[in-house]
Image: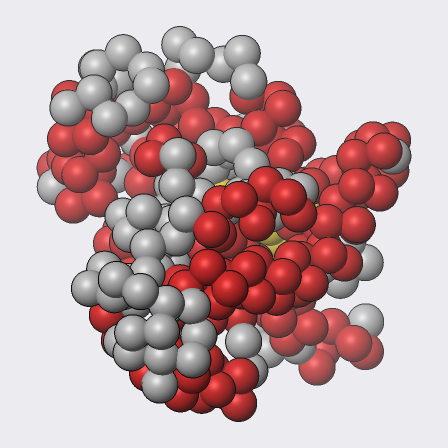
Length: 341
Ligand code: TRP
Ligand code: SF4
């Protein structure tokens, strides 16, 4: 309790279960979660209902994908004693709140949601594994997200820039709820912008599973090494003792900057420019560095993979904590709406 009071407030954030996470997730989102767990009261959840909004017809990997997200979180150092890890669909309070919010949300608010428009485009272009159609539930994407956030009446929501429009709708919905039901129940949750360094895939495109250019947290060291060896370098360089251009080294040097110390980065830069560093050797050394940073993470992941009962317990505990916290808020909500409670 004393510890709780020192925290800077309550946060919630979710991640859709899209499979095993990669280095882009690790550097951007996961490291941030590990940092936030010491500063805030945290609710971290796997957004499996949100996965259904676009993939309701291909659910065969949903459970495994959900577990893999939790495994990657635990591996990266999210500590179940500090943060509550739960699964969205294990929180009936969110489903109930989604109903109340869906009643008061004007139709045109969801229709003009810019992130949703992008998703619709993606679905229509077939950049999604599922059938190209846009369902009623899909239109409710931002409303469901609002329900996630307002279930805990949080202060902040750590998200990337692409999700900010959703947080804005959440604030609009919260304000509208407060107006309609003449209450001050809901706070206006603010985005806690995650400064996500964009890490390119080894081929120089955006890193992503579907592009087959990603390095997974769960890859083994040999696979990591093979993938790093494919990383694009300075394309204008022909021989290994030609002077190189780190600023034109599209991927490999970007990885150096993401993983190495400042001194090491300066050294690589200097040797590259002087033609004292061949690209193959350079990438071999880079792979070793990445593997070294990931070693304890991968060991932790392996431990949890081998102890599924421990993971189940962690999720059960997180579910229960989340239910307890959300139920406190929901009691107020039912009262405010005027439900027979
Ligand atoms: N839509 C988010 C994403 O795709 C995931 C998400 C669902 C979320 N509900 C949330 C994030 C609530 C923050 C808060 O990344
Ligand atoms: Fe990039 Fe290293 Fe090759 Fe220089 S030596 S171009 S930094 S891979």
